[in-house]
Image (tube, rainbow, N blue to C red; front, side, top):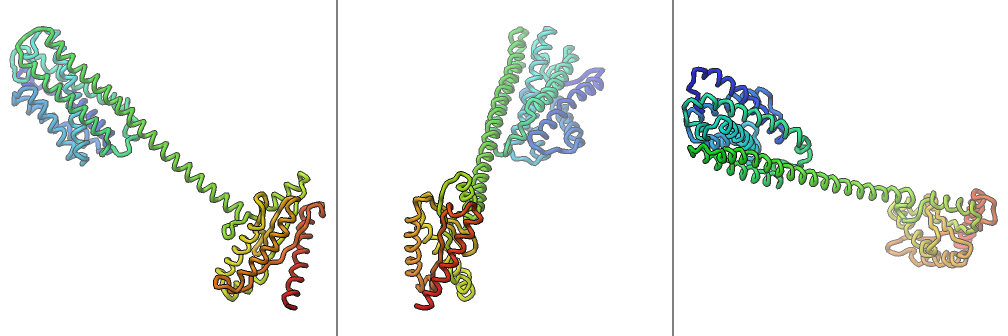
Length: 415
């Protein structure tokens, strides 16, 4: 643009104000895309001064418009890379996008003005200086204002894009966006060749307006598609995160359930499970038998051989009781060295035989390399029908276990 006019200062100031609107919204949009909020004096004032001086310098050099806009786009890319210190992919995307939207609106306003005043597009080329040049600042200024508000609208239209983009500097969406804006900018830049023709045919001006409008529509469709893909990818990542959390919660729930209902050392069910099952049977009038088993001499094993040996003792007894139990029976670690085996009424003979087999199996393991001590248990059995409540039943079976324990010790001492 060459402003050789008596009102040169007025035109310069007028275009500067309009260019400021454009420049301010470009860098506000770049702040949003990069996630880097620069100080206003830097993103609005400093960049405006630099860019407007570059714009005026290029205009005064009387290059062809295709060269002007190419230089401006390259300068904008370099400026963003220096100021924001973002990867080149992001710098090129932001810079070319800024130039492309500015050029698209300038194409529309220059072509529209040429159509209104019945002048050729060549009259609005930056190398031309004649009477119509007094009108050139107006379409240029209008183009910058429209482009500025275009960026303002984009930021509000896609206001959740940056939040949903996991890594905007390395995203495949960014590569696609870059290819989109580069293609559209090159198309527009090449369309500036129509300013070389001196023809005043309306079709040429309409073609110029069509080029700007089609580029803006194509850009909006493409960027909307990319935004939708970004949202879908964001929701996919959220879904994956939720699935992971659900799996983690399920694993934690299973662990807590195991802690609550199972004894970790022996794998037997907990005291609470056994107690609840027996209460339930009493409430429903379901008869059952309970076998109360107690380890003998666990304390001396712990004292002389260590708790690791005592733990092995407990595990061996638990396995023996589980072998004696049926599929529907409950084997519970009732206390430190006490176990319960609860079976239905018809399972008592199997449990009696199983307990004798357990005592024999434990005797076979005794005084071996793995168990350098004697393993033996005493047990008592009671039927639920013998007592009217659970507390009475537990006292009964406990007394029988201790009676058997006393008899077992006497037999061993006499033997």
